[in-house]
Length: 115
Image (spheres, rainbow, N blue to C red):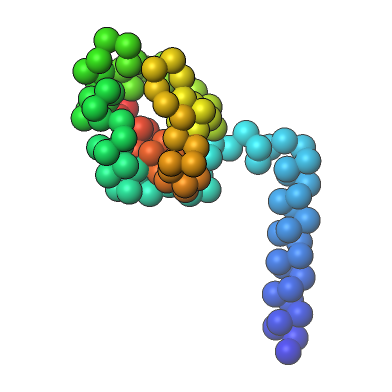
């Protein structure tokens, strides 16, 4: 019984620490992929929804589609990449409502493998 009480105190302490760090803004700066990313699922989704324009290996096959295997892509936070996938850009359609949030994060995780 004492062990359960110790465990609850540890969990409560961890929750307090996490909330404190969120208030300070430290955890908000972490990339989204830290929370959830399945690159193998992202690869499948990329092949279906993205490769037709952005190329199988991230090098654009359409003139209007940016190459995803370039350095500028990797300097952006995961949240920015996820926002572009959700809302679309230029000729790219929005995928919000087509892909689940976890699927969008999986695609971002897969894009990180293009480095």
